[in-house]
Length: 113
Image (cartoon, rainbow, N blue to C red; front, side, top):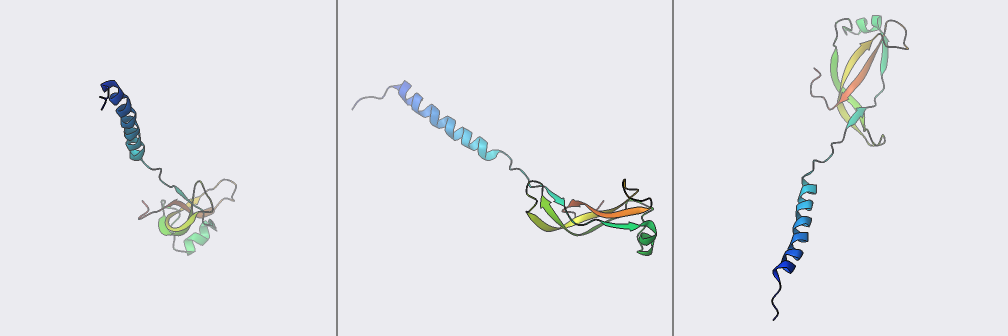
């Protein structure tokens, strides 16, 4: 049986080692996280109406966790029902003075802070 030259062994082992190392590097890359944006309807109210609802819009930040629909940023048809952080925003451009919006700001809230 013929003896295999050492340089041939190295020539065969080196590409296999590179393939294995690159495979491990690719596997260790962090997976992209899926980001969701709230898509629920925004409710507009006047400041007077908010006062009647026992909501203090004059002392921000009023915030509340409630259910809303959130969709992925890449596919707006991929939506889930999640807990969202709602806030009241007043003095909104393109709305009459005294109009406030009760709108979701972020998905996946445990407590709005």
